[in-house]
Image (cartoon, rainbow, N blue to C red; front, side):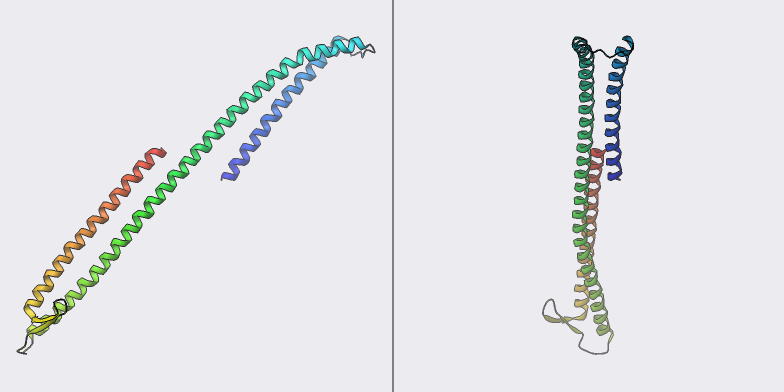
Length: 203
């Protein structure tokens, strides 16, 4: 896309040069035609006549060529200014796009870290439920000893207390899970606001 745009611009500059050259050559041809037509296309052998001819052509064409050169320079400067403005806008758009990608990548990294914590928490919660099921089996058994070894405390406690303790851990884990979701929402909200500001600058 950029290459085709560049080719079209290059072709435009060449066409403009050809048009200016064609106009200048047409003016020169017109001056020569008017001169020789006035003197019946006769070529003099006198040096003075050729000097007068040079003065005529130079006096008439020099201002015209100088004016054409001024116009060409003025238009060329205008084209260069537009080209520089386009390049500046393109560079600005590229920088904003890079900032946008950086924001998205940073938010994605933060979200992935939180998702990893949530997955670890869910795995731990699943383990808690298995421990509760094990303790409930002990509670419903016919054995007299209803104690369970609590690895967290490093001691043996009653299965009922063990179940209550695990349920407290699950509630704490649920609160932590809600906190993780709030963090995800905050990251997404900040990302949306940052992208909205960038889009307003681009527009």
